Image (tube, rainbow, N blue to C red; front, side, top):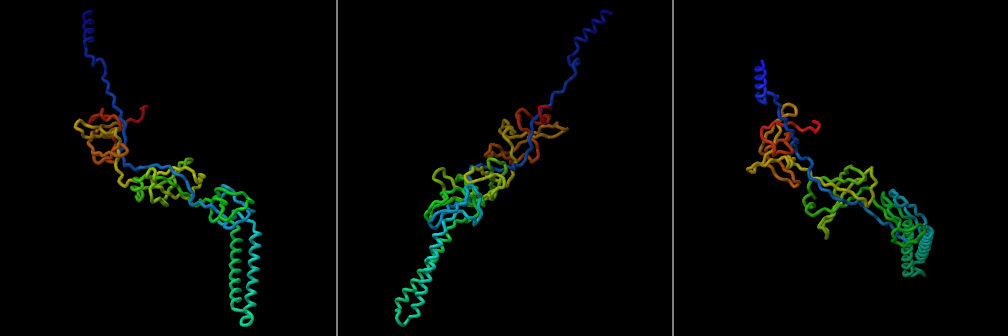
Length: 349
């Protein structure tokens, strides 16, 4: 009996290890995938610009006088035709009354001489009287002009930027009284390098938009004008863009703004990153295509591709891949054709 027990123990100890331990399947390697898709973002360039008014005007009286009404307030919007400032009207009214009286007197003198024509009045006297009437008429028109221009009104809907003089100041003709911005449309000025100006100036696929520091909203822009001569420093061209006045942010001349110029590509090529490319020993290029199987499990297909480098450091697919296919993003050199893998869906999995 002891012999049988010893024999059984010996057989158990000499049995193969595989017979004692159950076989465990090797874990399936996870891979991070990306979907091959057309590049719809285009090429974007960013410029820093400054807001300017559509036009800025320094308004001045065309006649001299003392300001007695000055309702304009800095920073206030003003309507077309609204009163900005007014001079003391009495001197101009007196000047007009005087000119009218002198005209009446000259006309009466001419009428008397015409009645005496051919008798005591000479033709020279009549001609002098006619000249006096003409001069009196001009004096009346000058007085009317002065009276009319003793009031300063807004030439357009605008914004009072600055008051250059105080109320009750006596100003000379032509002295700037206020500065007014035309804010009916905002203008943005940017400096564009020569090469971009030549390539993108007339390209219909280039779209321009503005973004203000206090907002993420993009506002479409249109080109209004540009300098036909490059600047001496930097060899850039000044480009002026138009923007309808936005409803939200308060934007004033001198404010900073970011201008985005986007080139929308007509040929939406397939773009893949450098990390997804496998270089074989013979120098040929491949990608590891994920062939779906059951759920997140699939197999690797090593596929040859033709690529062209882009300026952004990625590669454009010329052949070998189709839109919608999934390829391995990283670790392609550690994979081989036909290997079973699973889609990486997060560290929790």
